Length: 192
Image (cartoon, rainbow, N blue to C red; front, side, top):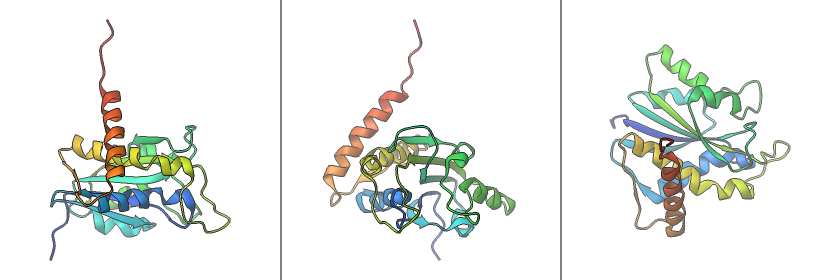
């Protein structure tokens, strides 16, 4: 039996509802285009809700990519939030939906407590009236920055990821540029 990963990156969402599929896209692009250490796993978790809890067993760090709404930011804005700060902006489709922070709370009840970090992308359109596959232009344009944000969080925790030689070189370049921008913005200088 394969052991649980120490680090788990999951994309959450529904690809049938336009921008709600951003988390799925991030996970898929990461899997296709980057190589991860043996103790790190990436997966598209779809809309699993409480069904995700079993995935967290043995995980020390959990990085979640998902759509968010109501942030006040323009569509396509990428933000890094704690699960508690993520919860008010998480996209809910019905009274049966469950927020990611609630999934973490349920996991804690059975002594599963990974450290969690969330990368959210502000949506433009989720097409709830009809099923529509594909991201809006601003959310699609945010994919490299969202991937860069995930990679930044992983590196912040000592997980080093490398681009696959057979991966999308244009995506690699866009992600590298976005990551450099994120790193520049994280540098704080003291006022004189």
